[in-house]
Length: 147
Image 1 (tube, helix red, strand yellow):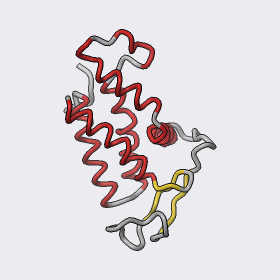
Image 2 (tube, one colour; image 1 turned 120 degrees about the horizontal axis):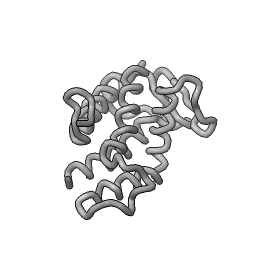
Image 3 (cartoon, rainbow, N blue to C red; image 1 turned 60 degrees about the vertical axis):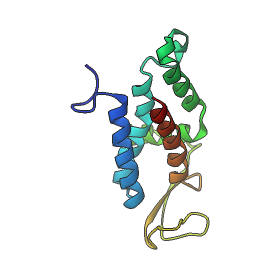
Image 4 (cartoon, helix red, strand yellow; image 1 turned 90 degrees about the horizontal axis):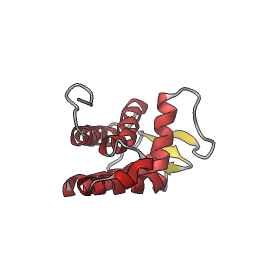
């Protein structure tokens, strides 16, 4: 059996992602972001563990999972999340294409309604990482609603 203790299915890992997503939005910190990006990046592999080279082997019942895997493979926001995940897992690994920055306090163009005035913002190429997380989580949420 695959998985990690009580996390034995892609649906279980998705629930974990939802919990971490809420935790990061309510309490943005590098600890919460680390947990979130590693879970969100790996959920794709839990949904379709066969990898991109085996899309043609998908049974009819697996076609949706293979399509999701491929869609995320091409998605710019997912690529950013995957890069952050790899940076989190492997010290010294980061792409110059994805400049990371942490800023403190509300800034025009970054702050959103409900943000705390002194909170930290995690930016990739000057854009709030929440933008990319929202896009990828919306794709996952739609998949699990249909599943």
